[in-house]
Structures are given as C-alpha cells and as structure tokens.
Amino acid sequence: MQNPHDDAAQGEVLVLLPTYNERATLPGTVAGLLHHLPAAHLLIIDDGSPDGTGRLADELAADPRVNVHHRSGKLGLGTAYSWGFQAAQDRGYRYVVEMDSDGSHLPAELPALLAAAEAGAGLVIGARWVPGGRIVNWPWYRRWISRTGTSVARIALRSSLRDLTSGFRVLDTRWVQRLELGALDSQGYAFQVETAWSLERLGCPITEVPITFVERTEGHSKMSVGIVWEALGGVLRWGWRLRFPHRDR
Image 1 (cartoon, rainbow, N blue to C red):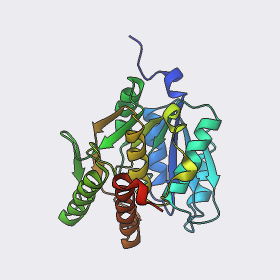
Image 2: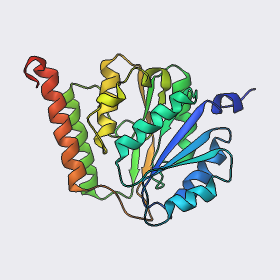
Image 3: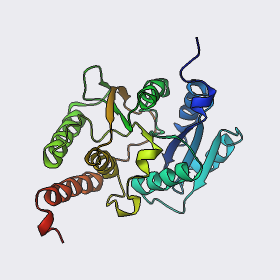
C-alpha cells in the first residue's frame, strides 16, 4: 500500500522555521523534520540572531532540502511568515507549514496535519485546546493566559475555532493567495490570530487536529508583555471593525 505522504506529496511542502536565538534547539527540529518528512523542504528565516543561529542554519543548509533566508534584525514573527508565504507561492509549493523551531512542536505530528490538508482543509491548526490535545510542562499561569486569550479572541471575533493562537499549522497556498498579506496588521504573535480569523471569514475549510505542545527545555521564550498587548489590541480592533465597520477609520 502506498504511503499517503510519499515523496511526491512531501515535495509540495515548504516548512517555515522563523528563528531568533535558537542555536540550541534548531538542529533537533531540523533533524526531526527531515526524518519524518524526508522529501519536504525547509526554509529557515533568521532575524539576525546574535547567538549565531544564522551561521548554524547555513551549516544545516549543506543538506539540499534546507534553505536559509537572513534578515537584518528582529523584524517580528508575522513579517517572517508573510515573507515565507510569498516565497512558498513564488516557488510553486502546494502546502506551507508554520512551526516553532524551539522543540515545542513535534515533527512526528506534522504528517497528521498534512493528511488533513490533503483531505481538503485549506488551513489545518495543530490545536491544544481540543479533545486529545495537551500541553506538557506548562505552569498553571501559562495555561490560564493561553486559555483566556483564546476565549477573548473567539468571543471578540465571533470565531468557532478552538485554538486561534496555535503556531503549528499547515496552509494550502491556494487559500494563502486569497489573503491580502500586505494588509495584515500584525507583526508579532497576533499574526496567528489574524490569519486564522481572516481565512475563517473567507469561508476557508479549517480543521483543528489535536497536538501535544511541549514547553521548551533550552533557550528562552520570546513571549513578553509587549507581545501580549499587541495581540489583545489587535483582537479588540478587529472585533470593533467586525461589529461597526461603518465607524472604522
């Protein structure tokens, strides 16, 4: 029986790995991806990491399945993904993957997300807050922040999605083409909410697949008060536009 994730299917997949100071975690993530999806291509987008992540990425690119794009500084997760989305379209990939490079997202779970995309979903979200999803090694307050933020976003945006903030995703580039990437507001983690909500409003078929999210064991989290405020401000702004479009300036 033929593997549904054969070389032909995987050759249509581009995995985006934005990095900033991920020298300790990047090699393991890359190795896991190349093992579980041997015909997929990886694109590391490094924001001028001062710890040498960019130089390490260049070494990993000795494998022809790995490419690196160097940016001049810390320009934000959202802009990295916007650039990667455009690159995926320009290079003719069918599927583009969003994934953390810090070990939080398990490469072994990516084939299940791709299977849902191949079954017809335009957006597949690796979800923590659905039956079967779980989080490993998060303290209670991180769980509370994530659950509360997701609930606020769902209510404000009238969304039916259970994990709007998850960063583990597969997108069909035919639906990415329908997004106005230049019109998106977000530069940081709020990009995840904005793109999922925008696709939901466009009528994109969306599937949420349960995943196990593992708290990083090396390096430092990029989450900050500023990132939280950007996300909250964006959600409230989009919710206002949704309810009062004629008042939006």
